[in-house]
Image 1: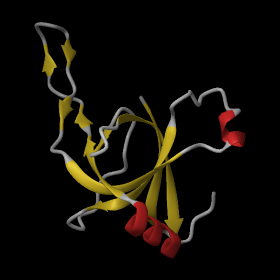
Image 2 (image 1 turned 135 degrees about the vertical axis):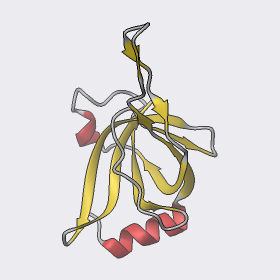
Image 3 (image 1 turned 180 degrees about the vertical axis):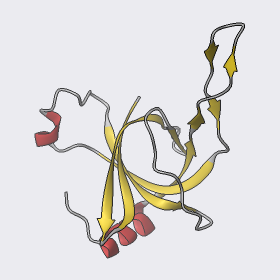
Length: 122
């Protein structure tokens, strides 16, 4: 699916919802356990739009039943640029949906990233 900048903005404005982005840092190494537990970063509120994979995309064996895509802005609701979502980041929507990042694709306008398409799953 191709996107133009004004189409992305219009889609998110009219159909997007507020979504909490919960990302994690590597955490501090604990010598007693020999491991480090991921530490949650402060939650960021972003605007996003969930949609389903196309039938053609679903023939890809890495897509599981229940997986979807999330069209996501590059800024939070206060206009601050967010870091690129990474594997295992979580997104929680007011609808009760909580999903995890599986992959990320950047959408460019010229040389600037204007949105992310995040593959998410349960």
